[in-house]
Image (cartoon, rainbow, N blue to C red; front, side, top):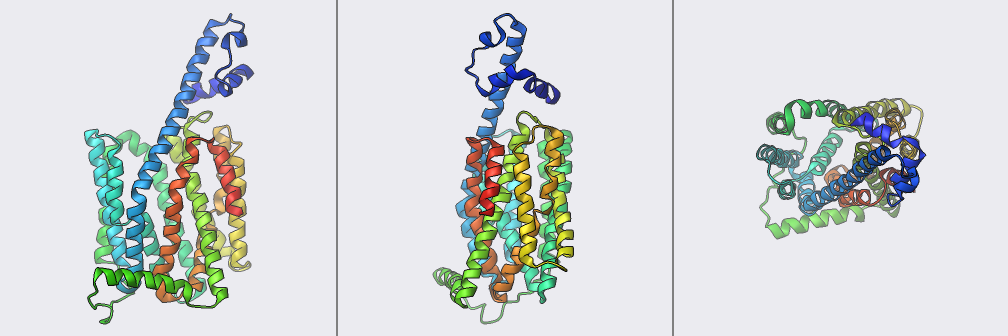
Length: 410
């Protein structure tokens, strides 16, 4: 499928014209004499339109799944991360891990019994009630900030956290294609569930929590009073402090939300583009691309470690944003497997703005408000995330990625 598809796509100017304009008269193009060429061209057009339809349906289904978990995810994230400032960071970690475990067990059952994919929407809704990856990641970030006293140490530890995420992402991306090919979806989801059980056990019994409940915090409050307290502390996050601090806080949150939106949004667009023509990648090539992209976590960690000695934080963030823009622009013109793999190189500094901007934010926010800050940054990203699946259903993926790069810089 892979070499044949590429041969058809690049076979002459006439075939390219017909791919761009399917209503073009094939008898006129070939003079009505080459019947075999016309038959081959019909096959090419059929495959091309089938891929376009698969891309559209995949994007719309992803949008439906994400919207189903948006509202419960926002509510659970707000409740858990806000309360973690007083009751500890372990609770949101444990509950979000339980939600992920339940979702993966349900995926395993769906794959084993061959149930309709629409049931994924229900599982996403139920799993989001316990919190999602946004809840877990926000709690991890707040946990790291609680442990650090010096600003330089805070930057390095956040970069290490991003680096570890990249290592795990790269290993799973490199091996996922082989796991699916050799073991199938059932055993793949079972392995993920087993890893989540180990992670849940470690968080519950071995991870220490730096925030301890005082006797004043343990006073029983009604549900209504608890909600009022959560909203009031969120309001105080912006009320306390000078006007300069409020402006800086809003500007940093806006910047990191837009950058998160761009980086997270291009991931499914890249996958859809790699699956379609002219690349026609299979699951192994997709894994290679994901693993190569995950090298950015290592390079970004080394970049932060080196640049922090000679550059300001804002300059490090600019380097990451500008190189990401360059990578997205080059991806819009990649038409071969080699070029698509080389396009990943400009993305090597993509993760630097994440660590630097979050460290700058944590310096502005008081130590007792880290859960509220993580809540604002992560829930804002969750609100924008479902939008990323909408353009891929109607626009060419590479054009969307190039446009997102300039939107993120603006």
